[in-house]
Amino acid sequence: MSAIALASASIVLTLLMFRLDAPIAAVFELSVCAGLITVIFVSTISLTKPVTRPELKQQTKNRIKRYWYLPVLVFVTAAFLGFYMVYPELPALVSLPDIDFRDVMWKLRQTDILGQIVIILAGVFGVVVLLKEKMNHDGQ
Image (cartoon, rainbow, N blue to C red; front, side):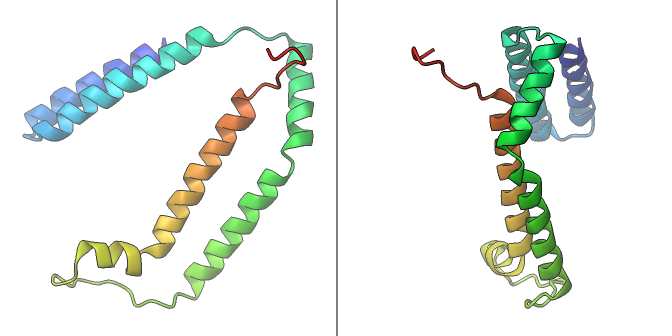
C-alpha cells in the first residue's frame, strides 16, 4: 500500500510540474518515480518471505558479528570529511561566470563528490548486509 501511495503522490507531483511548465521534469518524475521505483518496490515486496522472531534475532546477531566494522568506517569517514571541510585548501566559489562546469565539479567541489561516493557506498553496503544470504554446501 505504501508503494502505491508513493506512486500516487508522484503522479500528483507530475501534474503539478506540468502545470508549472516544467514538462521534462514532469516526464522524468512520472517515468522514474511513479513507474520504475514503484515496480522495484512491488517486486521487492513480492520476493520477500516472512521471518519468525527467533530467525530474525539470529540473523541480527549474525549480521552484527559479520559487519561490526561498518559503523567504525562510517565514523572515520565522517571525521575525515569534517576535518577536510574545516580546513579547506581550495577557495570558495562565489559567482564566476567564466568558469567551466567541469572545473567547478572536479576542482572546487571535490568534497561534495567524495561525500556522495561515501553515501552511495554506504547504501551498497546496507543492501549487501540486508539482502545477502550465505549459500548452502550444495550450492543453493
